[in-house]
Length: 312
Image 1 (cartoon, rainbow, N blue to C red):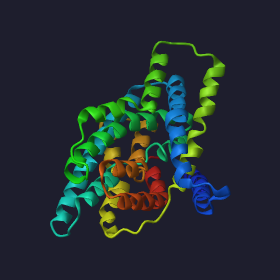
Image 2: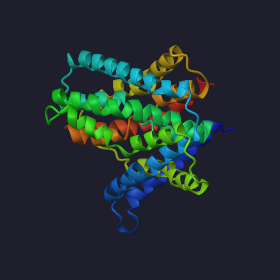
Image 3: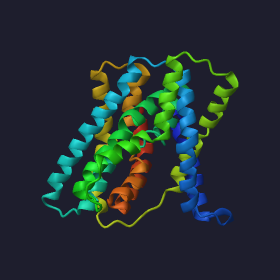
Image 4: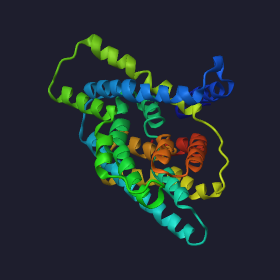
């Protein structure tokens, strides 16, 4: 008998498969390499901010919710430290280019906590769990992604040092971050929003999950990578070690219930799709980054149910 977790993942698999098919069939001559960025831009700049406003306005922000970014930040830093240590040891006996190392470190550390994590959490715990994914990502994972990537670029990338001022500006200009802040401000000020407007935001936000999963399918490809075996430690860190770290930290912080489970599940997410953009932006190995996304996403359909079962 199929469990609820397996059913959710099967639904995602169908939508991802449709994206893969759409990519290869090129229906009506559409170029998916141009469709996907447009789709992602719509989600990131319109639908996701609407979801953030509606979710935060409609949810209760308790202590556990506020602790989610703390757990996420500590998990990210510890995971990155482990990845740095592992690849420093491997690099002492195997030649790893600077660009490869940058891609490997990002792939091992940052998970797909919105594109896959958000629909998994809402599928398991209802729409109210969206706040955990949003807080995990936008108040911890995404800011750290830009800061750490900028730091790694100075050492491993092709573009040299990146000004921290530019990184701050990038984070401050993210529409979903503003969506969360607006939602919290409206909630805190007890502003009464007309019901039709709340439902409109909800309708826009409901497009996020299917479009994100479909976009994931559109992005699937199998690049040929010279040092593909180097991904094995990154995959193990991302899918096995990171969720254990996330659960341990959240537990030590005293988190309980869905908040605790959400931290572990988010920690178990496969490599972030945005890491491909980061690789391009900071001069890391794009092919290696793309392969990490594909492999960890496929493997996560087997590892995620294990992680989820450990939270129940």
